[in-house]
Length: 396
View (cartoon, helix red, strand yellow):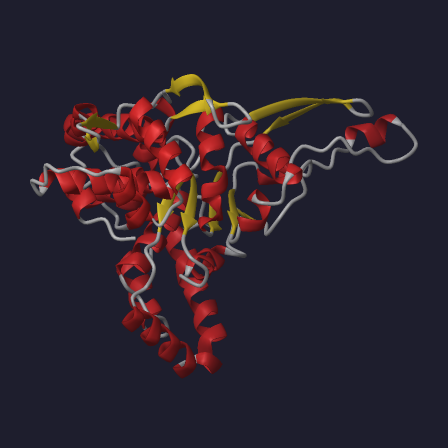
């Protein structure tokens, strides 16, 4: 059997016509990991790459368009996934023909290169995300007046891209039960942006040909046409324990109190349970190991899971936790007053007050002499999940 192209081959080919830095490599790794885990018995993995416009999300996701066992979808109406539409006539044959897109997604990787529109278009967005949430467990049974009960069974992974507009709905997602892991991309530096522009100008006429060749190499590596299932890498006891702690860290940091229409807290912190996100983290780090042909999950693969753990909370929460942790470990005992936070986060006083209220209610921070500090509870979650160095290295 001819040797399949390696991850290193794909990265090297990308360097011939694209600017490639660690952020681009990580995006490629997690995307291939999601594609590979779909063909295993690992828990399903729904992953969204989040970053500013033109940071390279769509470029990586578009590599998977047209590959076997992928379902490429740019957008969908609210009821498109599970539809109650029936052709005129009311005959039995028409009733049996259902137009639900979810059926076509079964056993595939669903690629949505820009989900920004899908999640920010009002009621239609709410319906679409609700249907996705219900389909996460592989089945949705929905009743329609003209169709009766529509029973959909579909098991699929999702790869999506989105701008930071996702932060508008992340709090609600957490309250209802988050289904996605997120990988957030820091913005390029001015030097990186300049180099990207120059590379695009240099290879502009050859870009399409390079992309076709890269898709071909990627398709061979994924081995989609042969139907061979990749071997699942093993994890040791310490790694599984750490993944469990990471799940608890995410659940603690992104949980939210329930507020009424006036913003008043009516239900104290609804702490998310970590079981689902732990399964997702296991799939992610196992998939990254498979990218490189490793039979055991490595420390590097665990680091990718840690980055996903930090990314999978609203951006302001991530920045808040990072700020208070890093301030504490540098030995700064002064803490922060609200005016400090208004300046650091460039937020209005009312928004900072609400954020501090939420973080205090969740025991992420504590007050001492009218100044705010990292709580012992947050410190314990950070230590148990071995997240301290990840927080120190946080960029963007």
